[in-house]
Length: 293
Image (tube, rainbow, N blue to C red):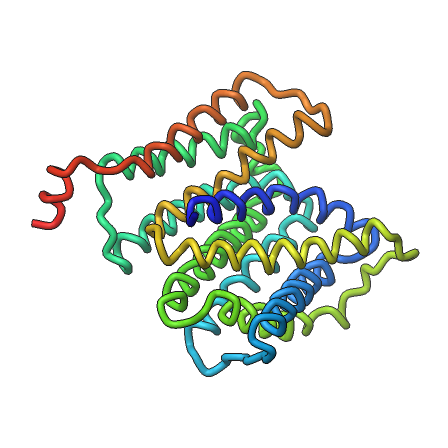
């Protein structure tokens, strides 16, 4: 069941790009960020009220604030970089997050980094980049300068930091309670710049409002499922499976938007899919014995 949850989360994340573009016709990036946290917290709050008939905000746990800081940094840095015209650089967030999380999994959570796992990480990174580049040269990363790239690096670290906090908190907290607290507190943090943001477009449209609400639903529910899965799988496997949203994005672009899929994108999809399979293959019993020794 936990693998179904892990696939369901990136499946939902694959729709984020389309929804952000739709919401951006009416709202600024700071309002979109705020809405994702606000509606995410509202959906999780509704689940908690139905289930427990009460709401509890945990704010004294330091790992809660690590999650708030990480996810807020992720969304804000990414939005600023995209606003600066570096939308193409967004493709490096997931590969960079995979590198960051691989290091954290080994150094902090003491997970074993075998040659098989390292190969899987490299394959997923290579596949993600090939799909996102769409046959364009790597020099596209430098088209808007180094500062946006640094922002995307911060976004990757922020996203990874949020996952780390979830991995720590899920051992002692319910996934719904944990994410409700993180997203509610993130709503307060990301509301600060909104009054100073003048990029608000009128009129209000039904599609844009729906997109804002849908983004919040995806934020709340996907991380609820993702946190549940973190109880059963390694941090590294969860991170790489989370990156599979790139494969879904490619599929939707081809099915619903008629976008051309070239040979490099197909190759990237194959390499990434093989990496995802490789990271989840059971190790031979002899390997397990050697690692425990």
